[in-house]
Length: 360
View: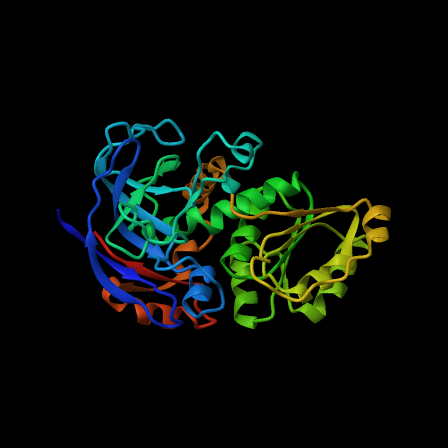
């Protein structure tokens, strides 16, 4: 059996080892892909630095694009859009493979499947070692939703589709209609920049991005933010734009309790707050339940996404990647042999994403 080179994280912060692992043979409904590239998400960095606990040993990386190299005997040969899949097709896939039959799968939350396989988050086990993007191959487990990548979509644009882009599709769905809305986006990382672009594309009248870093604020304006402000400027900006009424939709993508406390009083009566960034332990916040009731507010949490959101995400990028400069958000590409240095470079605040390019 041939081998596959992989970067294995065993739990020691800042340390990752290259190993040659057995290349799996896909069975049943599994599919084997050769990884072309994987961009490093913030959660990958948090795990690598020891700020987030993950099952170990593991192969990190979940923003992945690869080419199909082998099908299992019963592998699905159609992608989510009904496109016929063939050996050599460039594809991405949902971050969570789901069983389709458990309580959550049957109640509209397949991303919370009780038998989920989550790429880049699984402990290595016999026959299923290659379940992350920082390896030459990735084994797509049963229940994985696959999307063929349009030929014109660059690798650096396509890789984050299966994480940041699809997550924002789910977040915007939770907030309903954006036509004519005043939208606040808190944080100008990849989630926030994508939210700015997508909200504008869906008809938002005003998109106000709140970001601490000046460089990121400038970047947000290239992604559709009509106003890009520091936290201390936010209240005045919203008062002026809405005659003191408040924002229609707030998307909290930074994960900062301070960001929630900033925006909470400035959401209008009947408005919606969607929380996405709070995926790591932080200080609790105080919410006046009486205000939640009297102001008819909707407070939603969104974690990951359903397969249908990934298809919408790829379609969005195919349509808008020329209008918004998604391609330049991957600051650097590094080879798999230099993966530790890639993580080091990903720590730079100016780098929205750093990628590991593995195949051709």
